[in-house]
Image 1 (cartoon, each protein chain N blue to C red):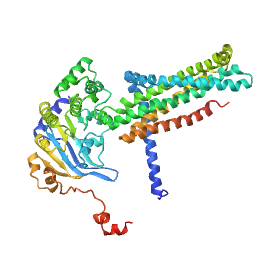
Image 2: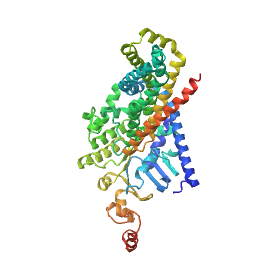
Image 3: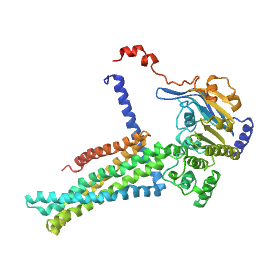
Image 4: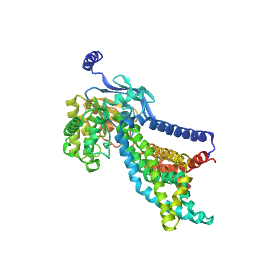
Length: 260
Length: 286
């Protein structure tokens, strides 16, 4: 085939540029939808419940096991240098800076992002979004914006829950099972964790990931082909694109936040 | 100040009955495929107008153009003299509040009950109290005979009922005209008769203008005041059902008599018979 033909390359570039433009416009409309969302707090509340509460179980259980593993690995490594009491600090820093926001975002993409994409895609396939437009109701404001802002609010909360339960997991393994001194465990953590540099940056990360995952999920649902195959592809793309974006963004944010 | 001359103008106009909707030399297509080519047609006020034609002839596209969900590539779509294609988002939404649209399969919101579906436009566009919303919704549901189904979910009702709920929802804000996309498709004879009667009665009782896209010859010709037959991309006939039935246009003849052969071919265009089955194909074939 003649993939190198100038016209084909031009067409491909133009399609990409159009897709980027469409995505940007949707993002701006979602951000501008804040006004509408504030006027209808009930819609936002329902979506926070749907995205947040229903993700709690998977986030909690994952956080516990990640905490267990961090406690174990931290103990094995730090014990070699005779500083097993630093497990508390290590677990807390790892969770607050990296694993809390990142793993929560990955789980959130799989649990809530797919649900969003499928819901929007199927509403589109059933002409529900068109019907809404014909009733002079903007579906971006009425359907997408509350979900976007709910995701943005739910993600940091879920990441906080994940980190808190993870620290409890590290405590169970380190202090209860392996016998590290409890006072040293919490004391080291207290002195080693900075509120703004560690906790604050972790929260910023989780907000950025919340925007990323929710936006990718909504965009994929909104531009999905209105067929069963189209919706299934869009759902897959949500997980792939959201996960990769989160990991890439995490690297960039870490490089900027924790320079020295 | 503004309303009085408007009302006077309206009553004067309505005696001459200028069209509510007018398409002037409209061209529209998706990608390379042209769906409407230089189409002009008029939808008179207060009448039931049927848009008919072969599948893919652009009937639904005409509804999308009137509703502003698609914009004409050339020509004008006039709603009460205003060009729908040139409207801003706000103007378009204002215009849409005057129209109701019934989608082919109802397009009910599947996460809401029948009651909430009909209440949706009222809650979005008005500040009516819950008690008033309830009364209006139950009145609209009563009009389509589904007051008793208010608490059911869309998945619990039949296709015909879903379309009646959608009709109640489309009427919730008392629109000036309603567009029906294939209201009869896939209905049993009883539901079909009920729907047709409902469309007629609503149109006459509420002084609406109705536009129906349909394939069902018999029922539609009985129901409509005016029939427009779209050929592939062009208007083949426009007039009263009797006039259209008597038309000598070969495409209209094929359509109203449901003939398999005519200007609309049975076979989709492709390679010639010889190329697929002929001697050359045998020789070339392994």
